[in-house]
Amino acid sequence: MDERIKVYDEKMTKTHKNLLEEFGTIRAGRANPNVLNKIRVDYYGTPTPLQQVGNITVPEPRVLQIQPWEASMVKAIEKAILTSDLGIHPSNDGRIIRLIFPELTEERRKDLVKDVKKKGEAAKVAVRNIRRDANDYLKKLGKTDVSEDEIKDLEDSIQKLTDKYIKEIDKSVEEKSKEILTV
Image (cartoon, rainbow, N blue to C red; front, side, top):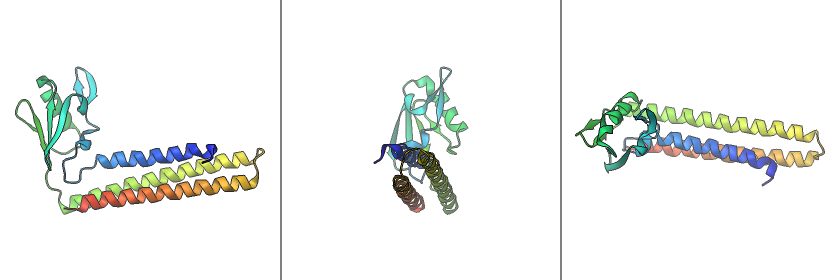
């Protein structure tokens, strides 16, 4: 791959990777520790990722269990979960916090699929913006001592990259939608 367009390939790769990370935080009826990735706990005055203050396990398909490293952290973890947009009420026995994921309703599943498609569209727009930036760069390059044929080849390469990533994003959206709709 030409060095001049490699940077745009990396940007498109990052866009797709970010989309997949966002999909990881969308719960699909099963307990998935990734839904806790965005939650920060007040650890002695410092907002700390939940994964760094306790052990997270999945003892059953719809249950997440959080065992804090320090017993004093139970209340802080519970508070962080309650103030998040997770929508699940934690229960604890003084040592361990349990999150029980309810079965998703058909309506909620459809809303989640709409959300997935919206995120997918935003990622495709980002990829197209990267293509536009690349083409602007190539136009400037054309004003220097680079031949028109070479510019045309680079533009074709950028278009192929764009098509490839749009296809990957569509595939990811399709897979996540299918996962959500599977009861």
